[in-house]
Image (tube, rainbow, N blue to C red):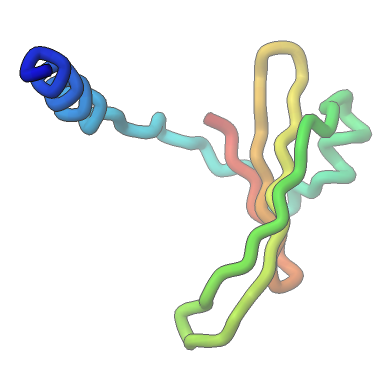
Length: 86
């Protein structure tokens, strides 16, 4: 039992050292429709709700697009769209 606890504890310690890759922001005029017309395929969407910096609730949608082995994620919220490429 002690060995199982030690293994579990060590695996949790080593899993904490995971960092996300840097992302490359796309130009401001990039839209989901523009990407779809240029051969990107819509892979998935996620609806989110969060509290804004002013305390008001906001909603948004994440679009994940793929083209071959490349991926772009776009976030749409409050009438603005931001796209990033890992």
